[in-house]
Image (cartoon, rainbow, N blue to C red; front, side):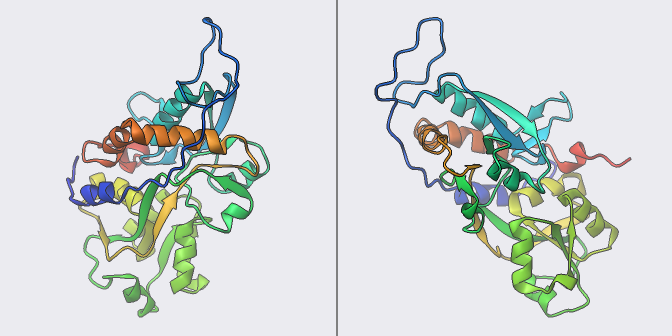
Length: 284
């Protein structure tokens, strides 16, 4: 890692699971020797294809590997393992963040996996899986910034502008502290970070994991400051009434029990993960 940081250890300590195990396949007929089957004790989805929306632009959850050009990330590894347990085939579909939740609510996808925060408002239109990780919201500022120590510093200085991504819980958190005219929303976080580096805005409110992804080669330009402003739990989403909720929760519980999630978390949230947004979006 270009910048080894104890914050990674704190992230790992904050990862929490609130998973509910579900029953097995009951009276499902046994699969033939030539057919794939679910893992023992797991619900059997009988080989069905599950379409999963991802942005492919949210480290370390989903991205296009800059070396291989192949899709990769936490979401891919976990959903591949989920389907291995449940006897299903994951079909990942790249989709823009804006409109993703509504698209799942409308039934365009079977699920979405894009670091989606569980909120009561969103739960009105989609079903959530059990939470699988906790995320802290922090402030990303320029490395030479001496005016900002916390969100209160921005609140108390009306000349300061806060950036974030539209349609995110980060934007909702920003609105708890500032009026809309002091918040500049961007379509994607890379644009917000570019504006921060250029000096067009003064800070970006961002999930801590994503913020670490922007440090990398920008360690001489950026830093995370201040305490966490919100601790949020992430979950997969489905159309209301989806029959995937309980089977996937059962699979997630098994992945906790067998140690898979611990291993994949260490892989993607530990100091050994070296891919940064500079690798994904190199300057022209």
